[in-house]
Image (cartoon, rainbow, N blue to C red):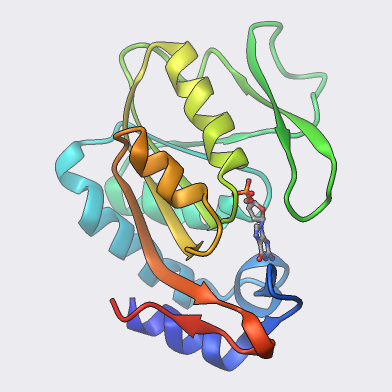
Length: 191
Ligand code: 5GP
């Protein structure tokens, strides 16, 4: 997606060979006009798989999932990282390592909101090793819903996450692919 690539060139920076900082558009401040366009692009790519629900993980996935869900006219659900007193007892809980925080966290989704009759599209902001996406995939599997695919805004292709999920036979689409962050420079794949 050319627009996202342009915004990353303008507003992104390299933290290390492994980490890109996108706080100005995705991970701290959010650019709503850009997010709306990203939502349209994900919707265009996945509409034929007829999702009935979008699933993401708090917090950076939320604006994106909102935009996709709004475009497709379906609800979105975000996995919580902390249990709330309002949450039911019946939750799917998965333990996932956090790439940016370097700790292991639990992610939780109430079984009320992902049911066997759902067709679920997973959306997230950035994929590195794929732990967050795999945690969401396990929740969809446990719920009995159909997984229609995984949509990722930014894939770092030099880390194994996107590849390993595709190898599971799951349709995985990235809007932008970063091939390297070496020498302080963001390199993109051609497509
Ligand atoms: P994974 O579970 O695929 O290893 O990491 C995915 C999660 O970690 C995403 O939710 C994303 O927010 C965060 N993340 C992974 N790599 C980066 C990165 O290079 N920059 C930022 N800002 N977040 C990242």
